[in-house]
Amino acid sequence: MAVARDIRERFWEKVDMSSPFPEDCWTWMAGKDKAGYGRFYTKWESSEQAHQVAWIITGGTLMPGDEIDHACSNRACVRPGHLTACEAGFSARQGGERTREKHRRRTHCRNGHEIDEKNLYVTSRGYWQCRACHKNSEQRRRDRLKACTTC
Image (cartoon, rainbow, N blue to C red; front, side, top):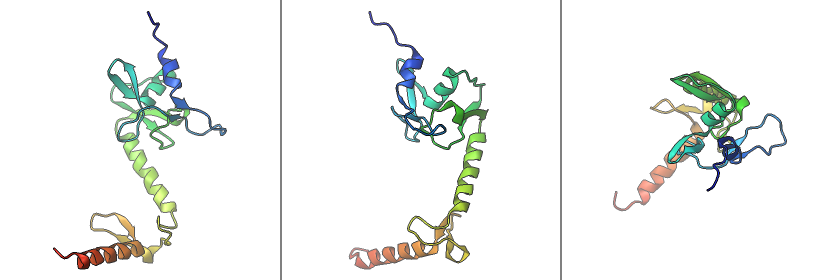
């Protein structure tokens, strides 16, 4: 009869801790859900989010209704030093603030156009878009419509 391995041993063998930098993320290398969070089977056919398991097996407590926030914003990270327990919804609010701050620091769009007040377009849904990219996108759309014989 096979002896069941310790849950900690099974868990940590699925984590990449190989970075030479002491504060880098420890990345979950096994299965992930559609949102990018690691999944770990604690029991037969019962999976939990890997970052929550990491929090609990390293001595953290999780009260009902609490969530685990990734300070690093890396959903696959299971490094206990990057995780904190917080009330439900706090993580999403913090994530939004981190995203807005990251976008404020950007100086160029993904296509290399400089972002400034003259080159910023706000869509009807409130999203920001580079004017040059928006203009190129609209031109491609018009070209496709011209080329379409059934439209």
